[in-house]
Length: 165
Image 1 (cartoon, helix red, strand yellow):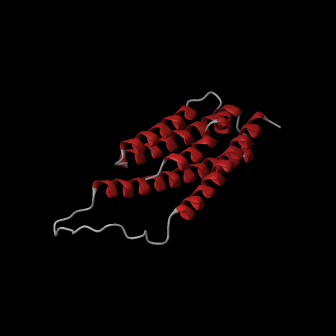
Image 2 (cartoon, rainbow, N blue to C red):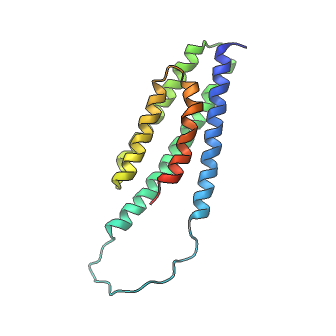
Image 3 (cartoon, rainbow, N blue to C red):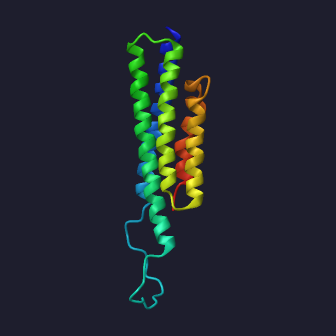
């Protein structure tokens, strides 16, 4: 079996694990979202000129941005898996497969970074920027398929733990 086929299969397997992990995280987030209304707390008179609190706005933005980062990583993972599987049918060298994977990772990092710019919460912005930087590191790795196995698969679980309102 040629090296390019081994690299492509390794990358596809790593991405498949990442995609499966992301799907599980989406379900866990939906299950963790309370469906019943919270018990009523103390009430205070509301002035006629009240506006949404900054905390509520930040929390809503965080939830939206985190969902979008999940979607972007899932879409990027699917693209990587599709492209990696396609390399098996084409007679590419190991370096050509690695170059394609690097390009896919660089594009994914750019997409994640774009979501970081939308985050209102500075901690969430920093988390997502760090995630983009880690993905960028994979795009510069000498062996991006090995990077996928060792590092990329850890990104979705970390985002699930830390990217929330």
